[in-house]
Length: 353
Ligand code: B12
Image 1 (cartoon, helix red, strand yellow):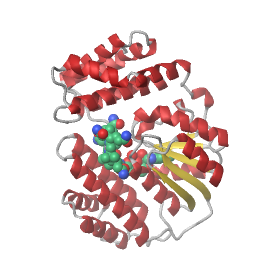
Image 2: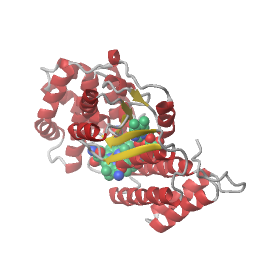
Image 3: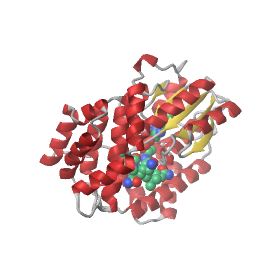
Image 4: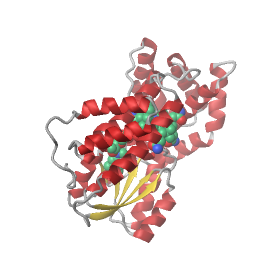
């Protein structure tokens, strides 16, 4: 959709794929001024601001993630690039402020508790502003109680919750419950909720959209009302997930020492993620979530981190230690997870985050 304040695209303006390549080169060179100039030039050449936000900056950030995961970019390079992209989002938004409709509605945008990927939520917020929404951007890692306090004080029509990591799904359920108590519908989005939004339904969100453009369209529709029958979180979910989180430190240390004589910090970090994703899979009762994580961890290159060979052994070790948690052990031993582990051993993983 076009932001109303933008001029019509000009013939001869570089196509957005070329702009994105240029932009990525500036990120790679840690060239903030250059990156700002590339993005503003694209807007001045007639590209829709929303397209620059989503098809240049957001897409470039995904590529940044691929380069980090492939081990070709360091964590520091990723941090610098992300900082630059945050500055570019601000510059693009100031350069051509939304001048179109206003008063469409009021929405709060927040990341789930423990979720530090704030840029996706920020991009969503900018796009909503351009479509006439009055947005309160609450930022990264907002505890459910704080979201509820904001809703009680400010009374927006909707709250949009963003998350990149499926391991944050228990926090998503907490925020849904807190928002429901205030009568505010919850729109969920970001990769945490699964490729088709299946885990947004599992935690009881009232709506889910795959990207910012689809979010605008969904919010245009008359009502957001989730399907409460689709909620999969039950007492077993809560108990086994809480047990896993409570034993996280002990499980990580125990499994690490079984895998290696001298466990590295990177191994310990990866095992922590493994326990967190296992807990999230148990929470929404979906072995597919854990299988996805197994494929992802097998594709990421972190020197010293969990290797493809070690993932299956780590899961076996966890199953042994968690024999009193039937859902957890069933998930670890599921066909989906076994196949994902076998894929790692055969080297057939595809990186999917
Ligand atoms: C930058 C970044 C970080 C930064 C974030 C800083 C910031 N200010 O955002 C920092 C350094 C904090 C970070 C940390 C980590 N990260 Co990181 N990160 C990224 C990276 C490279 C870019 C994020 C981004 O801006 N994406 C671009 C946005 C626009 O894409 P998007 O999320 O799809 O958003 C769109 C839609 O989903 C939708 N949307 C988003 N929110 C919402 C909400 C609603 C309501 C709706 C409707 C729609 C919607 O609209 C957006 C625009 O269309 C991604 C790579 C990637 N693929 O995204 C990795 C990535 C997300 N990170 C990853 C990981 C592993 C981590 C860490 C665990 C690393 C570690 N070892 O510590 C930590 C976790 C921290 C935490 N607890 O949150 C993995 C996650 C993999 C997985 N299996 O889940 C990724 C995918 C990298 C990879 N390729 O493997 N990260």
